[in-house]
Image 1 (cartoon, rainbow, N blue to C red):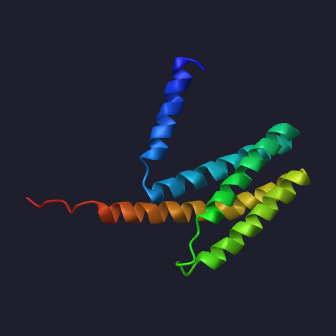
Image 2: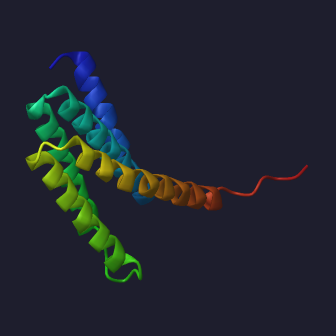
Image 3: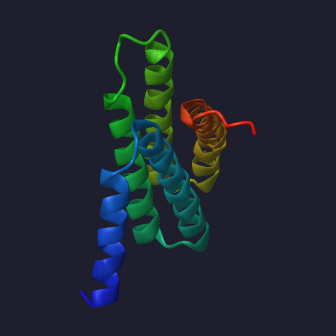
Length: 134
């Protein structure tokens, strides 16, 4: 690995290690959407090896999101069921080589991603100190 690639990897690692929990969640959703988009593009191009790799990585992210849910939150059961459905959709899209099912997974993830980003932005805004009036 050359120096530029090592520096990029160290930057990514540092960004993850220093991220707040809400930022980690939005990073996972960003990558999940990227994986699904890349998987669909690879499926449409007939590149089944690339599609498989992208969709399996997306499935891993969904599994991580699902495992991070705690039962102490009222919405956990509903979100857990949604993650189960999403994982099944991604698996079916991959096995069936079906870009339309991959698109359906994307259509499910995109509004969730936006909602989590809005929630994270809201938390970040609440944490900022009020501006001093002069």
